[in-house]
Amino acid sequence: MTAQDYRDQMTKARKALSQEERDLAGKAFAARLSAMPEWLRADTVALFLSFGSELKTQDLIETAFAEGKRVLLPICQKNYQMIFSVYRPSTPLITTGLGLEEIAPEAIEEVPIEEIDFCLVPGLVFDETGGRIGYGAGFYDRFLPRLKEGTPIIGAGYDCQVVKGEKIPQQDTDMPLSIIVTEKATYHTQA
Image (cartoon, rainbow, N blue to C red; front, side):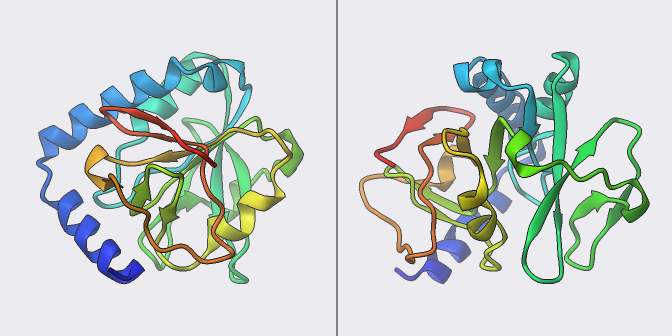
């Protein structure tokens, strides 16, 4: 299958989940991830607001606030680059042309990349070796190699998005993930 075939298949699988299944999965995911040593050691966490049928991240964001972590959210720029900005419960958001919620331009507080201790990465498809297929624009593929060495980079998705027993197509610019966390499992990959 091609990367687009996988994208189509996993988008359908995600959309087939009921709202109750999505809510429960978001809570289970947050509990699983927030118990990981990589999370517990981190002070500044780069997260994302879930979009559409993505695995819900709101519970994890609330956990981060409760634990006193500095929460960062991505800002996608016109040149396919990404920056991260401080996010607080009171931070105003806008809806972009892509339908994503982002921090309003007047509220952006960009954080230097070297201050990020933990990075959560969305995706449409993952495999057990750390492969990831995103939405195709390459924002994270350009951003991840710039993180300081040793920064935990964790893939986040529903367990139905993890292809088991086979590798998904990858390009030279795709950065493998060392850990993928779902509502049901934590996959430590060979990356």
